[in-house]
Length: 455
Image (cartoon, rainbow, N blue to C red; front, side):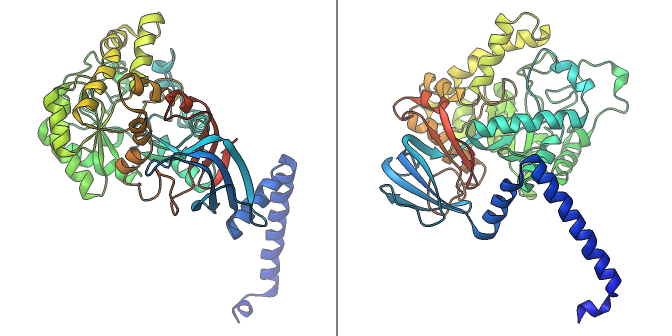
């Protein structure tokens, strides 16, 4: 027998150490009041919790809304949708949402989970260590999940976003499902170059592919491979200047056609899609022609570029909340931004909403993204109202934050609608967002992966 290969004393030592370790763990959990949670988690893992959600109304996104239905969740998936309020099976949990509207968990395609813009942001890049960033990011992630966003795409930080994604997936932290680019790619001195405005000798040697800074096709190829090696799910390229970086340019093109083509081809060869930050039209057009999946912001998008996006099937992620936030901060909060940033914020911020109005009317595909981190995390639902103000129909707005966003992520087989077999990512709101989109700011219930995280 296997056991006979080891001396009894050796096995006894292992057993004694295991018992000691288990006793310590149990006592610690009891002391912290977490032992009931542990038992619940073990029970769920071993047997699969069944939950009956009695819903006054559901908006499944595909198909017509339904009233007075029961959603049966088994484990982490939606098992059945039944008419009426079913009596729960023995041992099943029941959640009363009879006065609420239930929708799929929301998806924000543009967040920066590591940071939150403030007067001190430009100094923090020199004073914060990765651990400082990580602790704040965990708080921002929880706020985002509590706001009903069960999946987000993080479009660039220091790389802590990859560790946070892994921690959430492993159960060590609580937050939305994170799809991340790791670090964004930028030209030297571009929107993603954190050394712009710094003393010249602080960064020697200069930043390179490891930091997302790449000039020329060969360096771009290396930068893409490096981010994917480190765990990036997507690649983000800063195709033009930006608002919050200290460079004076906010809209000129930053990458040449051959560089953008190399970035997209290299990413695709490794099974990864590309998002392009772009305010100016020329850089935007180059990115679309190169084959990026999404254009972020799109501030000065021309009708010709809109036509190109329709031709290539490119998605537009407008980030209206961020545009409004930076414009307000520049206009009303004296000293909030350095002067070079303030000027760009006043120019770019107010323009995005009108661009969305034109793009939507023309038929460009719209997906939901807010640029959370430019404004406070957890306020993501403000975007719904801004999109409505730009002329989008409520049904299209809701779809942009659910099924369409899931399609961009190539996850529409798992999330984005209320259907049997999909993951049980569910939210409930007060009111009916089909009639009043502001109902999306009144979220009262959140479930992710079949686990209730807020009620």
